[in-house]
Length: 533
Image 1 (tube, helix red, strand yellow):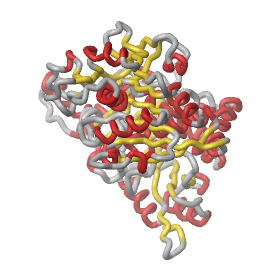
Image 2: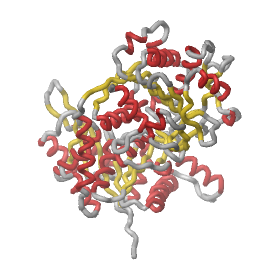
Image 3: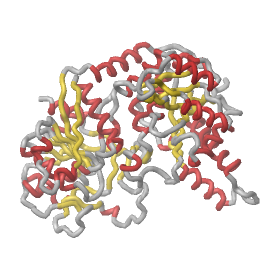
Image 4: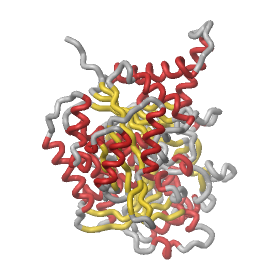
């Protein structure tokens, strides 16, 4: 019996970055899932970093971590949230990985006698990696998102590889473009979109579908004009106008028959799983029709770029749906709570306070002030990674009386290193891929808030950090009323800490990374439930 060959969808963006290729890719994955077809994403990023691990959140947005320790682009978070499925690092290809492989092969002698070039060696390497994923994972469809914009040098060789692959594989090309609306003129202008489509065609690729990102619904005359220049039927020009939530996109596309046209192009069966669609539709509807609202302050050091906290924001949305509540977010730059910043003025009126992950000294004292405000005023608190570490520092200072308590990460001279670097990290010289990363099992104690939230004594969560709670201070912290409610399986490291007098939980993990609309994070659900009381 002949095995079915994987079909390929390649999604390219033109004109400018930030149009939402991740949302398009995720929506296509979800639509295919509604029809029972197995689909996986593959993301190409043109930067020469090997992975995202050493990138600044201000420039790149959040670094998303997978179970297998891979540090990948934040779009993987969206893929997982839509598919409700954990993915692996082999689905992420970067320029750094590609060139590393080429150089390794050249040094090994694989190209002996040849001058190694972009074409054919690099493009063959790309095609080999893409087809290798398809052979290993065997999805019905591999949906490939090409990072960057058509015309970038950084992704040009990858686009060329996709053009070559289309000559021997079943490849569907989708171009995401932008339709400009100039208020002074009062109409949608198609010339930039036309130029973007033309630039793609000059590379030898004619799109099978054009998706138009726009602020308002696509006008019929706009659709017709773009169809004419793309050489497509107007039905294949898809409206991607702004939605109340990104989770609404699959159904919005289906209203335009995009699902039917795509399945026909791919030659796949069109048998819709109505129950699965209805379940998704109900969850999405709950986002916009909550019973009540709570306001949560996110006190972080990267709030000027909200993408740095995308998974935290989405986990709050999921927890809100689980509780029938709309979660309003008040973004607080942690430095605003330093140098005399009035915590009551900044945080007054919020129902919950959350301190997310982060690195370095800047803004840390502001976060500690926010944590103290939450504890003293009995406001529900959730600390993630850095937010858990600073929760321990605040407690050591203000409850245990250790005034100089601090983290060795930003005060290596402090006598009381309540947070210290892991012993095995001290000899590490290379920064990339060397933190405590990926999925780790956690053992949760009985009669704790964490146990109540998870409903289980052993859970798996993802990690990304170098520093831990110093075991030398565990006994004192517990004696003064802080509960070490969860540890690593061998008991050697604290994983979750709690206040006993009010709702306050800090976890060394990043539970936001595994939260999905269909399976929200238990800690977030519990946090929002408490914040709503």
